[in-house]
Amino acid sequence: MTILLQALLNGLVSGALLAVPAIGFTAMFAVLRFPNFSVSGIATLGAFAGYVAYAAGLQIVGSLAVAFAIAGAVGLFLDRTAHMPLVKQGALPAAIASIASGLVLENVVRLLFGNELRGYDRPIARDLRIGDIRFSPQQLETMAIALAIMLAVFAALAFTRIGKSMRASADNPELAALKGIRPQRVAMMASFVGMGLVGMGGMLLGLDSSIDPLTGTRILLSIFAAAVLGGLGSAPGAVLGAFLIGIAEEAAVLAVGSAYRAAVGFFAILIVLSLRPRGLLGERAF
Amino acid sequence: MLNYLLFIATIGGIYGLLALSLNLIWGGAGMVNLGLAGFFAVGAYASALLTTAGHLPIVAGWLLALLSGGAAGLVVVLSTTRLREDYLAIVTLGFAEVVRLAASNEIWLTRGTDGISGIPGPWRAALGRDYFNAAYLPMLLVVLLAVYWLMRRIDCSPYGRALRAIREDAQVAQVAGKPVLRFKAQAFALSAAIAGLAGALYGHFTSYIAPDLFLPLITVYIFLAVASGGVGRPTGALVGAYLLIALLESARFFVELIPAVTAVQRAALKELLIAVALILVLRLMPSGLLPERIPRAPRA
Image (cartoon, rainbow over all chains, first blue to last red; front, side):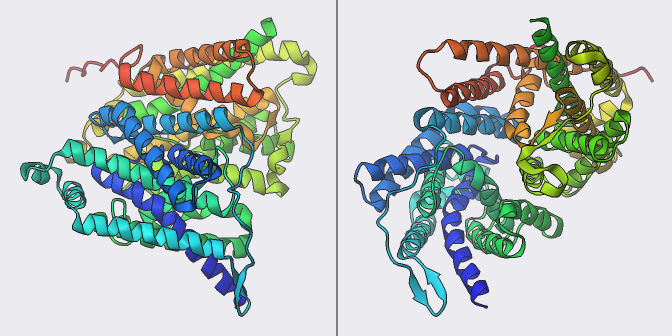
């Protein structure tokens, strides 16, 4: 029983961390209409940008801001130069180009930092215990930060002009353009914020463990699975999907060992696509 | 030197097979397979296991590679046929990851990350290493040409035209009475079978396979080959595969010349170069060196 509760708690923590990049990915898909595979490279980039900032003396929140800004700027640049010009030909050429640009980022990081594992040098703290369930104050802190980021994103989508115009564009691009929403600006905003969230997600997941150039590639399938599970293009769906994937991954560790943790995302995608192809919340519940 | 040329010509032929496989679905039916490396691995492992642990002849291994690649392709494509192409991209990417995980962790079957060594090659013992390489290349080229011929036949056949119609507009094809789902599933399974065969040919040539040889990078290589050669044209796929080999080998040569970089940085530079080349080709030369030719419709 304790083992199960512990797994549930760990799953909720990793789900909260996963939700941040998953919202970013799904929001970009909703507006730009192609699956952007460069999230793997961007997550790695964010993790390393945050790492450098943290090593230079910034606090966690400040380092996250650096990760957001750098990942967002680079993501926007890649979308403008490499991906969006190809969307005219269809979603597939853009998706293929985004795999290549993810690879570019991964190797730029490898060139600068090498392949060895690096960890954020955080102060050590004693685990807190409730009964037999243990959790570290740092886990709690990163989870709280992730929840705060999510709240901020949903508030922005619900109440700000740019958030509303993003939702309008995702829902019906032609109608939104007719109403005077400039599609170009919304697309650029989606790239910047979406990739910024992915970069912060890379750093949040790195805070919990360690980082290397493959950090983003390892979480790529989980991010996709969270987004597909909730319904591609749906931000609340991505959050729900992220928590479910986080819990399922911890459950899989209990059931079959940690070796197949990374396969959970794939099988979740297969099951959802077979039973409920539009995802749990549907594609348009932005 | 001759041995080196024979070696890269053979690897080029195997990439050629993979490029033909990708071209069939990407160029032919407008579908995408980001898990090409996974189907490549399935074929390589199926054939290696059957001929080492199963002690069956090499030809049986190749047949099993074809079948298992095709079966895996069918499973993957059938789970996404009702959905848009973006989902197929995501599922195939995941498939390749899961294949690599299984190959690394099912140690009782695949010997894990140690890989399988001592995969028999046809008459390898009798020929010795040098003559084996010289004998394997023509054999591979026969297979390659047979697949190439099949692809050309498909392109000119009513089936190929139906696939292209599906690529241009699946709804119109459906309205015209073409069984869109069945055709797409068939094309994808055939393409995956060819990738599986390529895997078997690779394993029996190098005599060693391991999970690390089937990284997603291979898939990026093949996309570069098909995109630069010309999407939708089998000849382009072959030309692209050998262009890719030329690029890879010259990149290796030039990266050696850069002073004061570590081995890791050299590898990173090489991957960087391939990825940038793919972006540039897609952006600047979308129809490739040999653009697709639409065969004239036959007179009724």
